[in-house]
Amino acid sequence: MSVFAGLVEHLADLLQPLFGAAAAAAAIVLFTALVRLLVHPLSRAAARGQKARTALQPRIAELRRKHARNPEKLQRAVLDLHAEEKVSPLSGLLPSLCQLPAFFLLYHLFSSSSIGGEANGLLGHQLFAAPLGDRWTDALTGSGGGVFGAAGLVYLGLFAVVATVASFNFVRARRRPLPQVAAGEQVPGLGAVAKAVPFLSFFTLVTVAVVPLAAALYVITSSTWSAVERAVLYS
Image (cartoon, rainbow, N blue to C red; front, side, top):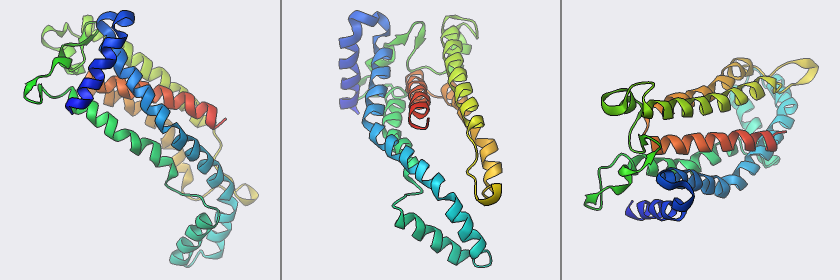
């Protein structure tokens, strides 16, 4: 973890002339962008996989009708179809899974009071008046000043960004039609899932509220990147 801490410190030093006291926060945003850039090929593959899975829905619906009384045979037939068309049902999960190590590294780094037996100097960095190692609850209590204190206003700004991105995702998800099969029939069970999916983006608000501010910056930057990326790849 000390190597990762050194990387963040080095990026902060490089960005110091441009961002001043907020250089460490800017370094986290830049680090997140670099991670997402590395993961982008997987995101493109996931988008192609999603389009391929959508194109397979009529054939899967036909298999459901053909094997309606034999669930095991239906499952094998669907898996064979995916293998035949070289479509992985799990490809959409890879971009998110590959980002988890970076998120947990930041979370642990800014939750630890010491690194390698020495005081964690990164905890002294701030985004305006909010320390990168603090959480929203710290801004609401003690010297944080409450909801409309200096640190609290930083979080209100971040919540506004998250709400804007989540609303954008919500509108796009609601406009996206459900996969259709023959004669306008919708895929069984897909309706309930489709109704819940547009609201998932708003759970990012909870994450931002409970993790250290540094990890929250990672989540916000990554979520914003995802919103733009999906708008481009799935258009």
